Amino acid sequence: MSKKVSRSSELYRKIFVILVLLIATSILAGCLTLGNNSVQGGSSRSRDESDRSSRDRDETSRADDDERETGGNAWNTKPDDQAGRSDDQGSKQDDQGSKPVDLPTDVTDGLTRDIRDLIPDEMLQIIIDIGMPIYGGNTPPDMTGTFRISPVTLLVSNFDDEEKPGRVFVDDLITFSEQDNESLTIKTRRVNAASDGGGIGGFIVGTDMHFTIFAVEDRVSVSSGNEYRTARLYSGIMSSEGIIDWYSITLMLDEGLNPTPTLLRNGQARLTYDADGFSERTG
Image (cartoon, rainbow, N blue to C red; front, top):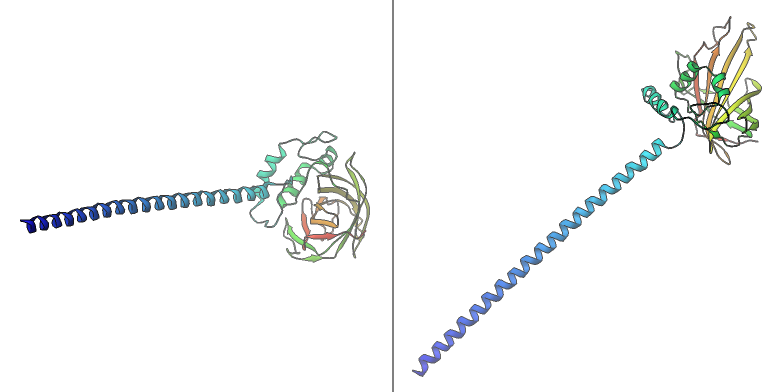
């Protein structure tokens, strides 16, 4: 009888141990499952936050690009690529030109009335269409000094020109003097190996370090005696050592009564620029 009781007790103990082990295993498995779900949830949240952060950086980059693309107050964007851009540029000009600028005289589009009287509207539109940067405003930088434009390179013509884009012309030395920011006037002198333009009165507009200078020159052909009138515009960004992103356009305003075959015709223009991007101050 004693042996039977002993065997029964031992059997009960074994059953009890097995039950305890089963319960412990079940509890441990549950804890492991909960832990895995927590880790996966945390990992998923981390990935979501990382994705949101990545999108935020992309949005910031696009915003920065927009700032660069729309910054400044030039009518025309920098003419890196002329083909196919006239319509887009004209649209931008219409948008910007609708905002009057507070200038000393009755003006719109950031240009003084003197400039609007000097350059007819149809000729001004040609200048815009060809891609010449124009910086309007009544706070241009001090341009006093002499600057070397080199290499003077043809960017584009608006007619069937024998001179093709990339053609390099002789260096120019441009001197600006007698600048008056009350009347927004300035005197220009252009000298190169081929000619000395002498001193020509002109008008200046701009904002901060950006500028555009308008000058009109009446000339007489040595060979034919023909009298004609051209407009020259200069645009860029002034710095302490020179001019950044210099652009210049020559436009025929009036070819005269007896133009020579080589003379530009009314409305024909050439846009040139300093191909290395910097025009050093020489005086």
